[in-house]
Length: 400
Ligand SMILES: Nc1ncnc2c1ncn2[C@@H]1O[C@H](COP(=O)(O)OP(=O)(O)O)[C@@H](O)[C@H]1O
Ligand SMILES: [Mg+2]
Image 1: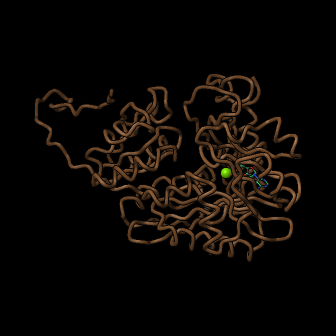
Image 2: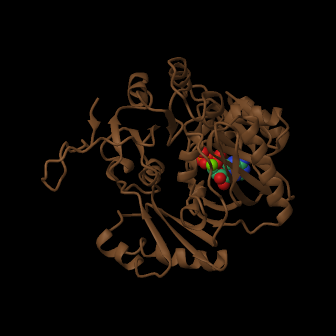
């Protein structure tokens, strides 16, 4: 395994030859994964002088490009995960693709996993999350585990076509989520039995009025900070933009926030927990997905809140005092999603930088259509105004 290191120079750089006394770092945190969430966590770790080391698949990963200390390896290989965890005070996550059995093993070896494997399993396995949440009385879309076309048809007959067919694990940004109109479409598109370890989940198609996410930070000792609700707007299963605070009625937000808080306590979450919810056209709130890590819906917290979700995540997993989640201003974030060509820093970025009050974040990632390559946040007196500014800057990245 290759390790990226930044050796401490033995002598003062001014050439006087004074020996530098090694300084104690505030903590050592290992993060599994090196995508944009790890990149922005690295930025927060720098502020708090935390020694963050990430497990990267390649030197092209987003966090590595930003100068994070890294080890190269695979999150599905126990030896690689163990190697990055070695010597860390806590282990945390940029994604949830590590086999849960590896995490259980790591815990047995004495590593401190934040969140712990039982809580993380709810982000790893949608079927498990639906089952656990509904058994605990939280409203979720009607669902069933399916492993044959007959199962899907039986489910759809009970709740009506279309239905949504999801792979229980491994999906993100709408990958693994399919709206299915008829049983013949199931037969054409899915071989539900041949997916190896893939388990499938059928869900009612929810008539969505709005989607929202509530971010909760929870420390190891159970202290909680709740962020203002975020409204997310998706297209083709991927979040295009978000508004903070959500433009929804106060009682809806209160209900959603209470639910998110009690989920965080109920599953013993540590770090940031994002609870994705649907508000249906009948006014009912349904829990969709859980993510136990910093989340795309929380990027506006960097500029809009007293404490960003990345700082908060580090503070929570280390059981340090949490910061205020209070908003300074209304905000909107627009995701920069790969279109037909790569982002051009020399033209597009420079034009976008001309847009006043737009905060641009590029992830340094290789281009692929549909991939999140960055985001733009704007603060303003209203979310509408903020969205207008963020969209103006983001539009520069779609023109050559
Ligand atoms: N049961 C459903 N009914 C209607 N739309 C859904 C349903 N499930 C998911 N979607 C849509 O697809 C998006 C992605 O689904 P989600 O389960 O959150 O998967 P991902 O892991 O890709 O984020 C949701 O944000 C929502 O817009
Ligand atoms: Mg989702």
